[in-house]
Amino acid sequence: SRSSSTHSSSSFNSQNEAEIAEVEMLLEAYDMLLEHALGRLQTLDEYIQDTEDLVNTSLDQKRNELISCDVLLTSNIVALGFMSTISSLFSMNIVPTSLMESSYAFDVVAVGSSVGVYALYIVFLIWALKQNLVRF
Image (cartoon, rainbow, N blue to C red):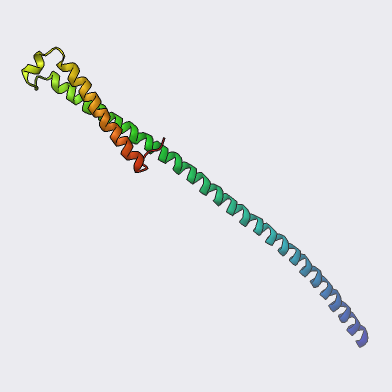
């Protein structure tokens, strides 16, 4: 009876060891599957981060182009403001009366201020191009 109990316990142990080995093999297979999935997820995460960096760079470039356009428009508005101020001073009777009585004085002041202001505007544009503030 003792030998039958030893035989049954050894058969139970070997069956138990076989089940444990089978469970270990399943766990190793699942572990390999999870490691593969983790590797794919890490690759996907890197791809997403690279794409995000690319989009941010593109947005920065567009923002810089808008700032450049804003610089050009603002400097043009300042030039028009100076020209308008000079012409308005002429019409407010601030200038000497000898200029007011001349028939061509307003034309000279308007054209002269336009040429002078836009010459300064061109000088500003050349300076801005040399400083890489604007690009064409």
